[in-house]
Image (cartoon, rainbow, N blue to C red):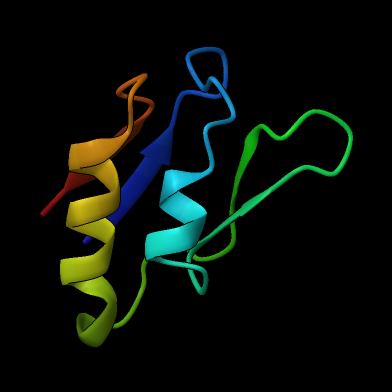
Length: 64
């Protein structure tokens, strides 16, 4: 799994951080998503897929 972010699309909703806090975080100044791990271990994959699916801005892209 490889994760990419489009921070220009991010609306700082924070849903990804709630679902996968070991993979995503938010910048303190504006809440824009920050990627902590662009190739997370297999046990994180379901959470990352869910985070991408519910992102209201579709800012998270996953490549298998």
